[in-house]
Length: 460
Image 1 (cartoon, one colour):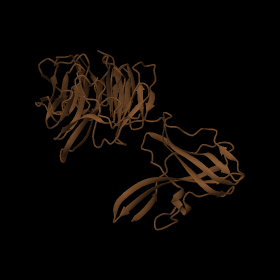
Image 2 (cartoon, helix red, strand yellow):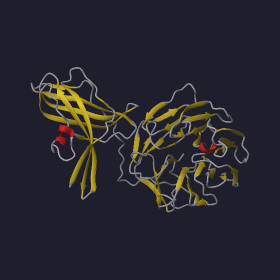
Image 3 (cartoon, helix red, strand yellow):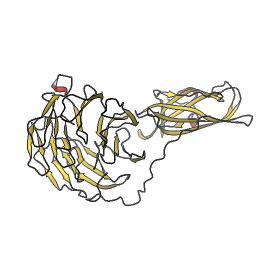
Image 4 (cartoon, helix red, strand yellow):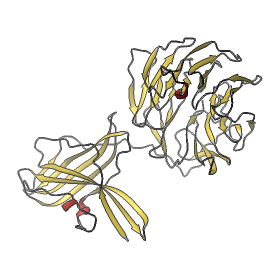
C-alpha cells in the first residue's frame, strides 16, 4: 500500500488574534493525502496543519478550532485539533517537520494534522484560532470568544415510510432529476419526488431515453418534463409512467404556469414554439428560444427570447402576435442572446442576460425595466414577488422595489425553485451533489447523493 502527500495551494485563512492568548499561530499548511494499492486509488483526504509557539510561559496542551466562514456569517465544518507536549516560549512547534513528504519524511509528523475538507466555493475564508490551553503551572486559559456552533440539521426519520405523492398530497413536494448520461452515451434518468422536509423520496420516475432538460409542476401537481427524445411527458400525481404526452415537439426549453398552460421550443430543434393552453387548442409561435428562454405568467402571457433577433417578445394567452417587444440586452449580436426568463406571481418579468451579467425587471405591460441588478446564475420568484437568485458563491433575495437593496441569505448552487404560497425554496448544489430546502422559519432539509442531474422544481 502506497501513501503520498502533496502540499496544496493555500486557501484564504484568517487567524484572529486575542490579547492574553498563551500561544501564537505561526503557519498553516494544507495537504492532500492519497492512499493507493497497486496504483489504484483507495482514499483521498485533505489535511490542515498548524504551526505555533508559546508566548511567555510553558504550555502543556493547546486546542485549536478550525472552520469555514461564508460571506453571510454562517459557518461550516467546525473541527478542533489538540496538541499535547512541552511547549517552551518562543520555540516554534512545526505542523509538519520539513514539509517534504514525497520520498520519505517523518512518518509521525502528520499525526498532529487534522483532516478537513477544503472550501468548495461558497466559503470565503477558513478560520483557525486557539480556543483553550493548559499551562505548565496548572492554570487554564479559555478564549473570550466561545467556540463556533453550527445549527443542527433537521432530524428526519428515514426508517419511516415517506408520505405518498398523490392527488391529495402534492403541494410543496420537490422534484429533482439525476443521472441520464448524454445523447451519445444515454443512461436511464430518474426524477425523485420528495415530500416537504423529507430525505426519502415518495416516488421515483425513471425515463429510459435521454434527455430530460427541464421539468416543473402545474397547479394540480402534475409533473411536466421536456424530453428531447420523447417530447413533453406529463405525470399525474402518483404516476411513475407518463399519463399524457405531447410528442409532436421535442424541444428542450419548457415553460409551465399554475393553470396548466405549457410551452415548448428550442433553438436548433424547431423553428417555432408549440403552445398547449389548458383546455384550449394547441398553436405555434415563430421563435427560436435558447435554454431558459421561455416563461409563462399566471395569466397565460408567454415571454420568448428570440435568438435570431436578440429580442424578448411577449404574447397574450392565445395570441400569435406579440403585445410588446424589447431588446433582450444591450449587446447587438444575435449569436450571444443567451439568458433566461421568469415571471413573478403578479406578472413581473425578469430577463437575465448571461453575456452582460445583468437581470432586468419589467412590470406587467411595460417595455422599460423598473430595476436592473447584477445577474445570478439562476433565479426564481417567491410569493412576495421577491426574486431569489443564486450563483456558485451565494444566494440573494432581491425586491422589485428599487429602493430595497439585495440581501444575502445562504450559500450558492446551480439550480433553484421557489413556491409561491409557503415561500419555501430549494437550492441544488453542484459542488456537493445535494439539495438544500429552506423554510421560512429558518429550518433546512438536506437531500444528499444527487449525481449528474439538472434542475429542481416545487409543486404549488
